[in-house]
Length: 359
Image (tube, rainbow, N blue to C red; front, side, top):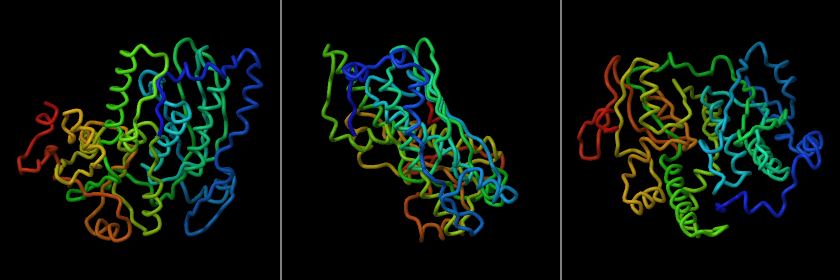
């Protein structure tokens, strides 16, 4: 994973203005990016491979639900061109979009991408972004349908929107969450913010150095930087739910940090939650960054966000069954009775409120 500081400067040697070849010619170049050549999908016990989106709707439309999702990444808010490779931005957009679809226990099948670009963006840069979008679509079995771009005056904006499909009886609903359900997360948490902390530190070093280009040695931070710049979606756990016929009582895309996302779950269900600090799955690489920065690693997990993991709730029986079949998840708490608070039990047994944590 390479973060090259001053991305725009590094691409000046291959800068073709859009005006040189024209809008239509750029779109023709983008036609090479098609995403997945087919949509492998297993619905209702029928294996159908190589189907077009329209054929899937024709075959399964009366027994499934189609739904739309969209996502926008804005330069200066969601990414910094100082250190973010353009291809990674496109890939990340599709990963986050896909996780939004997986949060309803469905599958993204078709995606369109629209780029809003200022004059500083060249033909090669548009191709790099769309190449990342294309790779993200292939990784998630999504057909890349429409590609478009238009001008703006200041910043790059990537807008992806598309269609997902879910079995009607397996689509998750927040109404199914009950007191006693286990609160689970896939993978590990806090790594993305750890990667961002390293990149921001190195950006500061670069700015202070006065160099035009700057390539820091980031080998020790490869894992956390990858989690920030090029996160992978969690199609694998959705596959496991389907394969083992496990239906979570809820699924959500973990994008605001554990505490904020659990608080949002409590707000929507009217239930409380109790989180066990000691069980938070935090990678050793994330802990090393926090130690180096002299920061609290638990706060990375609680409030960091952008981990591209899934937060889901299961009844106790399904927890035991899933754990025998799929290991990459952790129970971090339990849903509690109606109108109770969100509380956190620290490693030494102290019970904290949400206000205590934010304070």
